[in-house]
Amino acid sequence: MTIAFKPEETFRGDYSYRNSDAAVLRFPFPFPEDRYMYSVNIEPHVRSGPSDVFLRPFDVDEHYIAECRDKAITLERDPGRCQVLPHMMLAQWDTLELLMESLAADYPALFSLVKEGDDFGSRWTWTNRPLGIEQSFTFGDPATLPCEPFEYITRQAQGDFAICDQRDNNLYMDAGMVTSQADWSLEFDVGMSFMEWHGPVPLAHQTGVFERALKYLLMLRLGQPVRRLNWTMTINPRLDTSPESFPEWGTDRASVTPDNAGHKVHLRVELQTLWRLPRSNAILFPIRCYLASLDDLARVPKWGARLHRVLSSLPPELVEYKGLTRYLPAALEWLARHDDGRELPVGTEAGITTLAPR
Amino acid sequence: MMHSDIKSRPVYQPLVPDLAGGCHLLVVEGETLVPGRLEALVGVFAPVQASLHTWLAGAVAPMSGLGKLWQLESAADVVDALACASRGYGVGDRLYVQGTEPFLWAVATAAAVIGFGEKQVQLHHAGSLRRRVWCTHCHGMTEGVTTSIVACGGCGRHLLVRDHFSRRLGAFMGVMVDAEAPGEIPAIEEVFA
Image 1: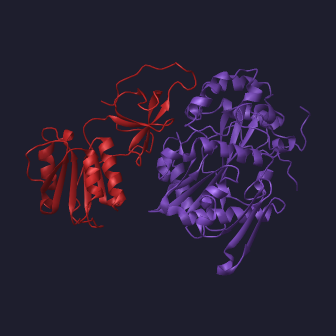
Image 2: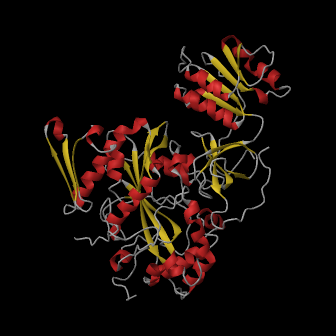
Image 3: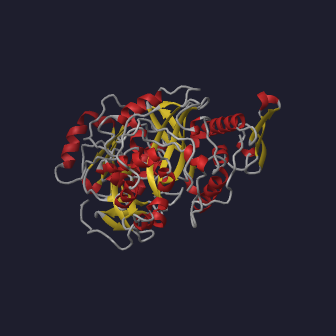
């Protein structure tokens, strides 16, 4: 397997981010049915599923290099996007180990990890070929890395990461690397309990979704990660849709017309996985973000039609919460052209293996 | 305005002394001692009077019946006093706080630092509903907010005051209200008097 990286593409400014045909076909489309509502849609994170993004525990794709660069830009502007409370050092090392071991095992042409020396091989050498990094360090000794271990490894990974400490039958968001979030603030949420950080989500509390999800997660076992998909919409292929930078991207929402919606409006899907960590007993919560424009999605006829139906029937509370109010009519007008009203099979699979030419 | 669909919004209860506690520390924001409230507290805390210390912040009122009384100037002095509490507090001790919301969380956060667990602390909201608002954009705090929209004291943006609450910051989230359409600012209402 070789990945043709696109190191020059951007997620801001001229927004040169594009998906190849292969990237469109492997997009983790989140809607198996014509209507959407919150549920406890958690399943085992096994190496299979309706999209290739599920084949490896930590998916690396053609956007890897460009995404890591965008993350570095965001951190440079706002270092507070990475925060770790002082009691989380062990969980930091757990995270570094999990990511390095997974990436090296699943992408041997891209990453390698060598463990040598006494103390059970605590002398580690990490090689990241796409980013041109080689680092020797002592596992467990933060002074041997250029920054703390959580920041070090999550700068080299796509997506956001939170670590939830488990105590008092609850989960607390006590660490995070959050540079591509769907409008939530780590600075505000750090240290919050599970119910608190989900506080603003409408409708789901009343149906008991969060109580059930929390109970489930408190029982999460080592070596048995789980996953779910979440979604929202973003104007332009922008990773940094934080509330901090809302003044920069808020006006984009007013720029959508039925004519430009195809390339402006993006479906933003989060592959959220949850991992019990071995030493700290904390839970690692990676949130991997995939972006596809309506143009991309409509090239898969089933997805274009289904997205039209899901968005047409979305409860008004979710339209408001997800920030779609201002541009949803224009997006629906664009999508309606791609929905002939035929019955669509249940499931998220694309149902085709090649795309018609653009 | 005390109830909200947003679950990060704390729900407060009346103070009730925990008879199983060792030492009892009652911290009261002076401005919330409206007529009748002092007498009510004296009645409620009578069973633990012998082991009760009361810290009264920001009001000078001759009073008795609330154990050993200490007068402090402000919430900041309460925070300092807790930070310097050299006798130490143990797991058997109890803390009760009455005040406005910014006061409650200033005290609760300082108490957590010196080891008070959640179950040792009771918070009772009294007095004004005014809010401390945290600006999502510049991270500045604006104190004493009583309106639905407020100009940020840090960056000047007009912030919509949300119900989403951070205990760590003791503040509600403020988000630029006209970020999507600059200049379109809805009517500002007095809602947290």
